Length: 50
Image (tube, rainbow, N blue to C red; front, side, top):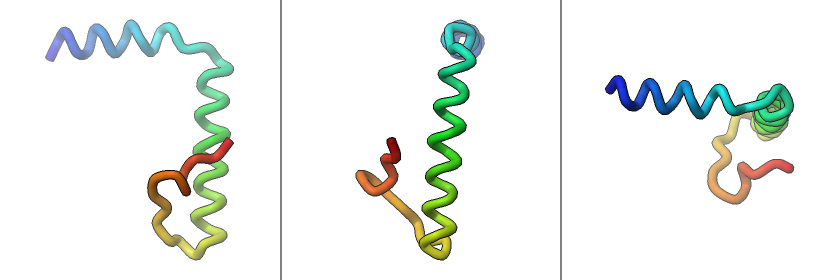
């Protein structure tokens, strides 16, 4: 478990502010699509938002 924690921290520390911003922007778009579809679950290729 400690090895997993250590490796996770190493990988997270390599992410940039832009990486986090992109992730947040994509999450926001997916949530907006979910709301627009009345909460319908979106899976697979339909969940990709670029």
